[in-house]
Amino acid sequence: MGGMKPRLPAVRPPVFKGRLHDARTATSIGRLLGVAIAICFGTGLISHYLQHPPGWLADYLPSRPSWGYRLTQGLHVASGIAAIPLLLAKLWTVYPRLFAWPPVRSVRHALERLSVAVLVAGAVFELLTGLLNTVQWYPWPFSFVPVHFAVAWLLAGALTLHVAVKYPEIKEHWSRKSTGTLALPAADGPDRRSFLTGVTAAVGAVTLTTVGQSFTPLKSFDVLAPRHPDHGPQSLPVNKTAAAAGVGRVDASTYLLTVDGPRPYTLTLAELSALARHASVLPIACVEGWSKSARWTGVRMTDLLRRAGAPPDARVRVTSLEKYGSYRVMEMGREYAHDPLTLLALTLNGQTLTPDHGYPARIIAPNRPGVLQTKWVTRLEVL
Image 1 (cartoon, rainbow, N blue to C red):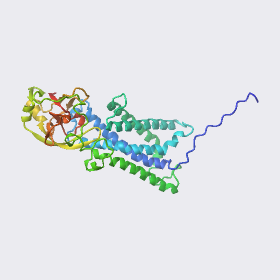
Image 2: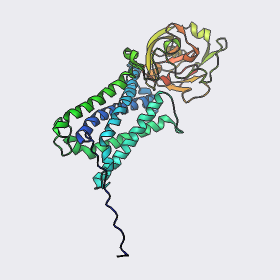
Image 3: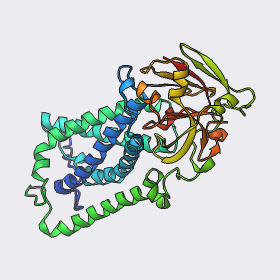
Image 4: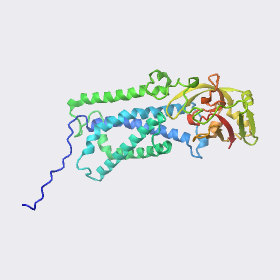
């Protein structure tokens, strides 16, 4: 008797008595979350390739519709913000399954748990970093754009694997009348409807109070977004000021615009201002999600390139007076460079550009991310 070891108590998983942790409720939330993530992923791809096109694609990126990027990036940020309460609700409905015992019952179950781990980690990372990007706060050591882009593909793969593994259960609980063994009793139907109504209200609230930064008819409700479309110099927001870009006060008497091409030339600000002026009503649409249309007046890019002897399919490289920054040098494909709406703008809404808006001259082009609407332009180079 003395040599017998005491028997350890059996490991029992915790018991969750809360309701609504059922497959039908999880599927209902998952449908909405899947739509939000799909929209966010698709529009994110558009944004990435407009900002960083591979060489073979640069000349084929469309410059029309002029409001295209404003729409897609507005949807990108809005769907990402809407996905946050949906993700929290989804995690609440399924978290008891994290404590299921045994942890792995089969190969299929192992794949399911692996896909869930990657899916949750990827979704939390993408939504959190994307939200912080809207306020331009980067409390991490890595570069946001390439990491955010890479994890988006990881998230898409994990979501695809998860749907494939869970397809039988999703199919069983997709319709209004769920007959599965994990379905709630009929008496709990009102509770599920109340829960889903509350989640929908939360999604509507965060969307209504942020989407006005890009959908200006709702700008009066824009109380949670980091930007208001009317706040800023000349009633237009600014992401990077002249001081932050290292651009001092530009002396109009010494400013020169250099245009390199088969027939290179330079222009003083007075000579540039004396050229034929054209106006374009175009939006500034920034990757952080805010956008607003304005009336810009300046010299057409096509006129400047033609004077330099540029062929009709030429690209152009634009250089800023900005001292540092990843976008101080920018290239435009032929569709943008030769679009008649693309201007080297000198005025904004009838007023000379302020330093923070790019005085003395900036690029404004249709269907273009705001980071590529180069300010403080000093050089154009025909490619």
